[in-house]
Length: 58
Image 1 (cartoon, rainbow, N blue to C red):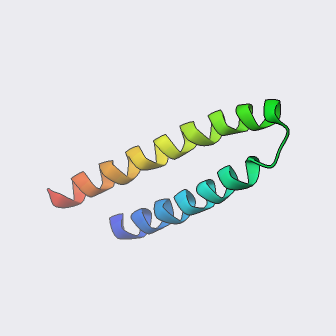
Image 2: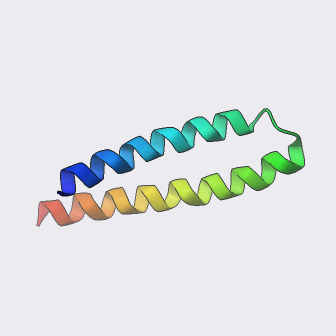
């Protein structure tokens, strides 16, 4: 189960990174707002990935 969750989180991370790259084409004020949201989402996905990795080592 944890491996499946980890795979899903990794896929989500790839999609978020792609969204971040696409957002750079937006007008600056919209880009800055979206960059902030995407950054927080990436941080949360990274946190969950690390949490799953830690729990699978136990």
